[in-house]
Amino acid sequence: MTMQQEKIIFQASDMLITNARIRLQGGKTFSTANVTSVQTTIHEYPEPSKAGPIWLIVIGIFFGLGGFGSIGSSLGGGFFLLLIAAALILGGVMWIKSIVREKPDYILMIGSASGETEGMRSKDQSLIARVSDAINDAIVARG
Image (tube, rainbow, N blue to C red; front, side, top):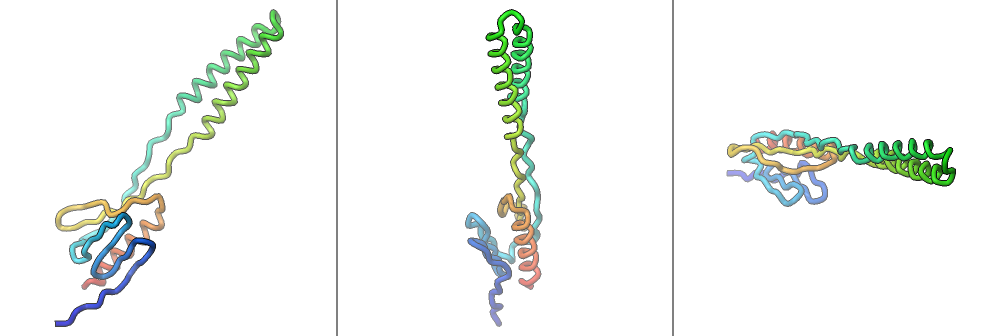
């Protein structure tokens, strides 16, 4: 009986994929013999709400209308309201520009006879693709 030598297929930081075992980020280890499939899925995050900054802009517009309406009767008060309006509108616009949608998570799912389990999760799509390819190669290499 001959013992097959373990062959490294992929190695990066704390990950190692060989024809005998799969060690992924977070210390999850699988026997290649038990892995039947690998697939990737994407977890998208919802779009952040822009209700707060829109309300800030609307309130700023009302302050601006009030400032324009009172310029004739009280010059100083009207300009003060216009200054507040400009600050509120500018703050709302800057707030909207600062809202950034979070990048999706790419999830590597490992299939076995007992079902699917999450192998690893990353924001780096190319890393997940490389690891997925390496696991497929390991499944083929195990014989």
